[in-house]
Image 1 (cartoon, rainbow, N blue to C red):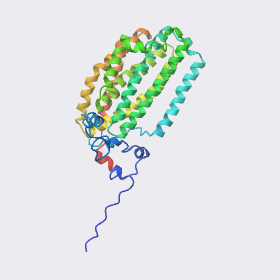
Image 2 (tube, rainbow, N blue to C red):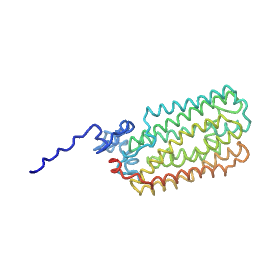
Image 3 (cartoon, rainbow, N blue to C red):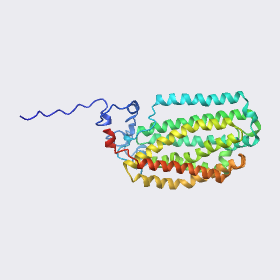
Image 4 (cartoon, rainbow, N blue to C red):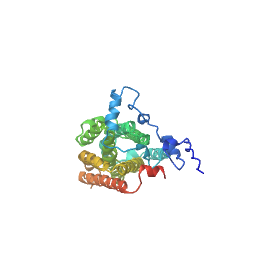
Length: 353
């Protein structure tokens, strides 16, 4: 007696995830497959002539990027952030930074700053809003052209982080302008950004990254090179120098904003690990871009380091700043490729987890 053939199991609501044996998380449900330009069976990213400029742009700089895997939808942000989770997280973060700003304003702390620290804030800190805005534009582009909504969402949250940092810098600029009207706060930052010799390597690097249209190179230029290098200068080292100079407020604000930078580093490291595990040739692609951007990142750190040497406490030399920034970046890179070599399994193994 022959057995009756079993009917194929009817697909359920979450069939977009493949043959999964678990309930997708809230993060996966609201993130998966949300990038309309990567829909299946498409002739182009947009419903236009395949040879239209927007379709050719996405074809050239995303779909034919040297950085590629079979299925980007298998990537996951290690923080599994959704919009709701991000808002709650940053609400708490804003309470901390707002509390710092309020407490030091009540204490008239800006009136008590040493002249050297005022000069450092005017030459390094307040002009950095132009650099941060450039970072924000590059991060937004990465999110816009990314090959999966998992990357798009992570990049969009990182873009919002940079807007938060920009807002803090602008707020402090106005406070410092009121406290030291003759120091040029709120008036000279654009001139410093465009003309000060110390800022020109950073400006060139940002402008070059803004025209790095391949999504993988833009990601490498910002998330793996410029941001890890210059954030070490403008957040960690500036914060430590400020604390040495008696400016506890700048140190605390930098420390709190470092949390955003650390979160960007986590999802960026996870993305590198995923890309290299899925296609080992991606390591050579990424290392080639890293080598291309190393001189620009180091030159930018040296320029900013000269400002710390000139205005910061004794012992802060440009060579020290560059050395520490390079070491921080290289430590980050070591972790990147170590993670890529760890397990993690194939995309098929993850689907069956």
